[in-house]
Length: 149
Image 1 (tube, one colour):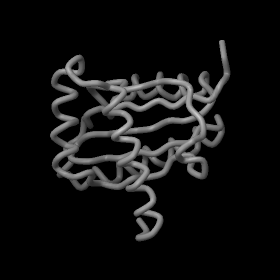
Image 2 (cartoon, helix red, strand yellow; image 1 turned 45 degrees about the horizontal axis):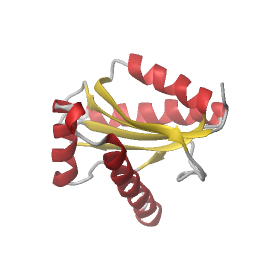
Image 3 (cartoon, helix red, strand yellow; image 1 turned 90 degrees about the vertical axis):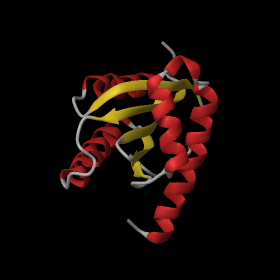
Image 4 (spheres, helix red, strand yellow; image 1 turned 45 degrees about the vertical axis):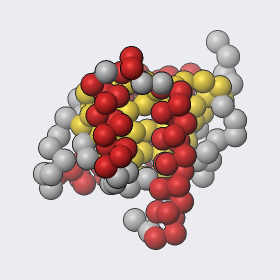
């Protein structure tokens, strides 16, 4: 198995009520767990949580990214997990982050796209949508770095 650098992008729905005050605690927990495990495995990436949807980018050695994604697929905090893209990739978009946080809002257009994707995953071009999400998340992470959390 090749150990080349890979990037994986997925979206999913949250199993918790996003209007509930526990949502920010859930995000803090996910970030803490992700940052610890990703740092240990040499994986970087970013997480966006918007209107009950998760979007995540994982970057690193193929086996490490697969290990993390396999754990995500078993995580009871997610449902309707949809893999958009998993391919060789260099350079990393989030090299300084074991898990950057892109924020709580991607805006209504993105929420609508995510709803459509999860309602009918086969109708969406995962590569194109994945590239669009990657650009959005990179911009949001940069904005978080400027504005602070």
